[in-house]
Length: 406
Length: 183
Image 1 (cartoon, rainbow over the protein chains, first blue to last red):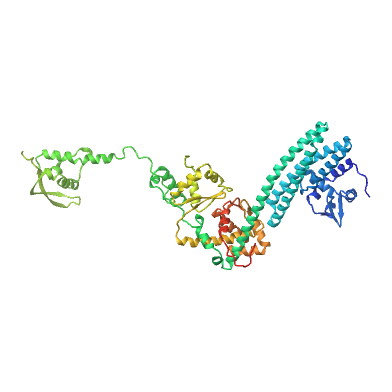
Image 2: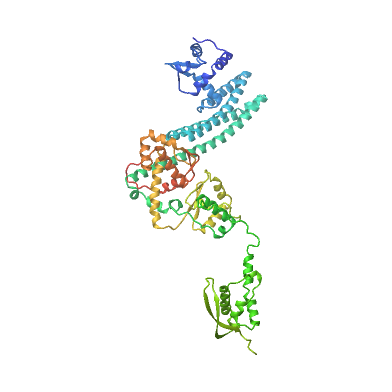
């Protein structure tokens, strides 16, 4: 039993059960009745009501949305399958109404003509958009390549259909152009020119889509061929026939890419100059810290040296100013040994031990022998060493060499 | 003539390790640098002095070397045989390895559990114990050669360089022996 339903009632009904309708639309396949009844917003009565108004169908404990509702939602949201029938229907009705209007210039027919024209314009655009969306979707999301190919083929056929319908529409319009001109109606003219523009635009769009479909199909076929080939090669490889039945070896030998060569990465040595620099020092220090090399070396680099730390060294060099000592000796008349032993060195040098004086004597004889005259005579001296032993010391008597009288 | 791009050392570093620079990877910027104006020819000339030749594929660059010792030829063949196995594995899956495809290691492992044929292939490819580890090893291998790129711990993206493998496979001709043909 079907109650008459006003638009208002229908919209209200749909609104009240919007969640269920969304659910049912989302899950295209039917939903179990128990699942629907388990929802908070659904009761047996409500379900009964919806079924009685044929908004949903109940069949064998499963519930599905009525086809008309599904189509309505799909149509309106421009989703779902591409159908050319809508365009076709409108073209038929346009043709009929044109015929009627020619017989009877009733504004009712004119209104219908306008409506058909508008509808052709909107449905064509919509179907073309849908077509594009579906093609993209199929190419990107369809997993099985065979189904993908067939679907794309199907869309290719659909595209041809739409193109034909566009051509048909264009022909009808151009044939009726003379008639349109006789009808004085500003709206009709603007609708017609709009439609012409839309048709042309959609035709361009469709040729773009066409090349895209072909591109997709080619790519899929190319890919599919490659995958088949890979699997075939693998098969041959498993049978150890790869080398004999294919030119595998030649091809791979012919490839020049570096990737097949395991190579040693380029190794550069550390620049020594860098290590001497401050940066090098910080780097080596960091590294040593990482390797725990410094665990026994807590000391830091020595601090700044005190001023005059090398004063002692300076003093030493004054004490050993042998040059001036020799000069003085040259002016004296004594022999070198006695001179060195008895020489009173400046106070800051301090007293020199006998041993030191003797080594000084030996040093002078070696370094300044060209200024000295070694007579060959020996002198003798007694002295007491640190261990209180009496010792006799023999030494060569050396005198300053007299300058050759020129 | 423009100056040689300043990324040249970086490019050389990557390519000389036998890797690829793909347009759709994280090195896409370097790809753009090489493709920019006359840079390709300049770099090609520059790198020619090092004995490597900069080559251009479909959306990727790589180095080639013309003279090579015999020993490496054997290795090459061995390695490509491995790639046949790997490509066979991936092309047996629902999702094919085309440039831009994203694979999740866990997802592949999951698929292998339910597909006995894939499972067998995978078992032959890696000796790791767990399925996930096996897949990760293979994917890591491909990533090392520049065919894949790791996006996060689990996700690998197929690089444009995969075209290189496809190209080589296309070059191979199979003798028509009247045996079962897959076409």
